[in-house]
Image (cartoon, rainbow, N blue to C red):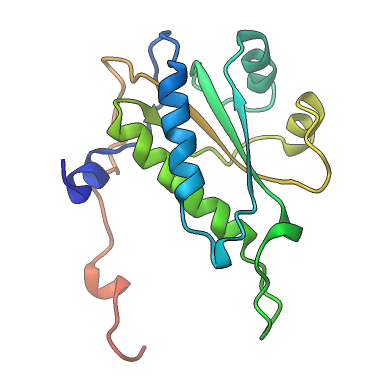
Length: 172
């Protein structure tokens, strides 16, 4: 399938089968994260894999958007490890980790898994439950698994702003 087809096919999956995700598929997703582009290739992303039922239960106490997925990636970044633009001090860590997360979502779709990017969580609880060190910022949760046969696609999935509103050529 072409990239355009893959990008259009991928949707935020909010209902998963109970089927566990095989280690080779987890590794494939993590390899996509590893090769994702980051500013100056600093790679500030740090990823925690949660696939133990007891730990997933702890995670569900931190968000109501775990969707009972059999696997969840906690995407973090280390600001001190990132590129910092010398002109204005802008740190690339959050952007880099977002690019990494997008690569992971697309790779998961490509191998038959569903994901959804979750920002609605209690970072204090997550940090406590999973001993995430203070030098890491938690960006997102990425519940992942085999989509349920009746996993609904959000009705807004194929609704987009007008291209002319999004794009300007040469000036605003």
